[in-house]
Length: 182
Image 1 (tube, rainbow, N blue to C red):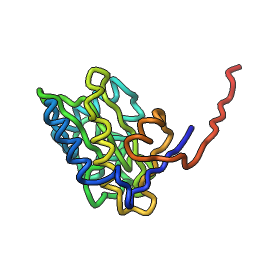
Image 2 (image 1 turned 180 degrees about the vertical axis):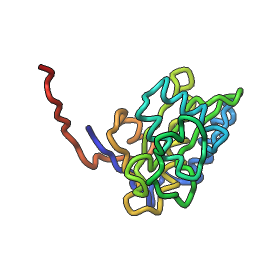
Image 3 (image 1 turned 135 degrees about the vertical axis):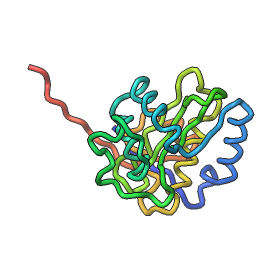
């Protein structure tokens, strides 16, 4: 597994102007990008659990922060009980389609809270190719720009995407050992 790092200071790929241009492109394609709040969170968490993984849904719940009360099973087990609040509030950004349904997401500080680490993120297959992932990535990286450890993208899948979108470089490589089934 590989961690990447994006330089956040003086990186011409990680700027407010570039993020705004990508958001305009998304709006022109019929999407709305926003910081996830209590109104959007339950539908997003259900989508992520169903289409990606339960663990990612758990990390998103942590990235949403301790003050966002969602009720029901999303607050059971206190996934945010020991989660400090972030200056920006929720560390989750979402893209909604024209009907208001979540179709893409990106988060920071769902794991290693307060360090500005990025992830997870995902886009439903039918909505790929509109720049949603790149726009949401930049929103997150801009959120953590002033954090000393910010810009780490942990356990990456699409290396080329991150290199193109944010100029990432390899940071750390991990070997995962598993016990063989007997």
